[in-house]
Length: 356
Ligand code: NAD
Image 1 (spheres, protein in one colour):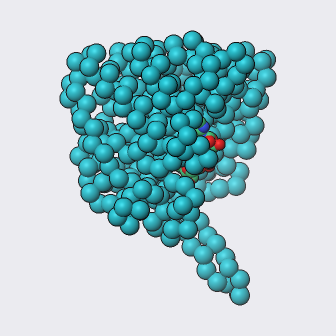
Image 2 (tube, protein in one colour):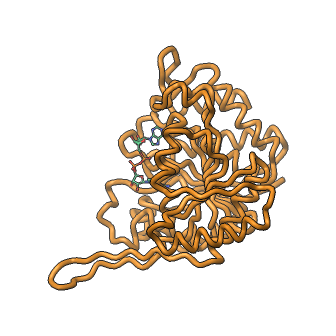
Image 3 (tube, rainbow, N blue to C red):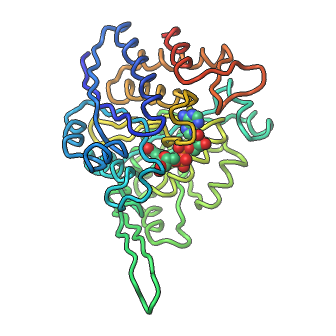
């Protein structure tokens, strides 16, 4: 198989973690007889520095013409004062919109080797953590109208949170399809006691559920969901939610599984094109120090092989190699615990590579 992969290193630790993921992809391609052609694409703060735009048109075109996109992270304090239409994060929002990436899939799974890194008590961890967050990615408050205006002599800010029935229907179907391959349970998270968009959300999700009689649907308010993720995460199988709630809950879910550094994500379109990235940001506090955990990016590459290219065996080989490295006790600083061996980003890449 030959595939073209657009690679966005981005900012901060982006280059460090992506470099390790590319080594793993190259080695997997060699072993299984595939060819992956990597094309570097400028986006984020580094693109602002080089050409004044957070997402140059050429970058967008390359991503559109690729079979998939692999991204490190964008942003950092250097670009915090850029105007909102040209901030590094805007590059991500534009990519999501332009590529039609409406479904964000984030697994929250406790790897047994990382138990000690989780802040939760043993009695909670004993019940297991293994759920998937399905987050709508191109609607809601992040894509609504944003304005700050002067009213009666003071500043007033407004952020519009808009959802259409068809947007909700598309993401709900993704969640139900995933649930069918798992424990057949969807918990839909909203704030239907307050928000109109949530009331429509609930109505549409219920109507989609009628086509999935084998999947059990229940609803949960987002404030309760935030609490339940810490209190009893084993009750979740597929958690379906809108854009902003998903952003917040998925970070919470990453922490209970040990560290934000190991969680991958996929943002999917209706076709096979996807954007794959670790859920963490550019971590400016450790950038350039070889301290970043590359596992979230490496597992994102594994997700790409499975979900966009259908290379399940190859994806599993990468996941196994990651588990082996953890099994042997190697840890980057963010997941370090007693008795383990502290390694840097590159060395973690070397160790995982050995097991491919
Ligand atoms: P962050 O995820 O970058 O960092 C939060 C904390 O986690 C930091 O202490 C950091 O050192 C640590 N951390 C994150 N990833 C790690 C890794 N792989 N290995 C070890 N430790 C890791 O979040 P933040 O500090 O809120 O944001 C920093 C910048 O990243 C901001 O400019 C933000 O806008 C941007 N950001 C980008 C993305 C993205 O590109 N998708 C996502 C979130 C934040």
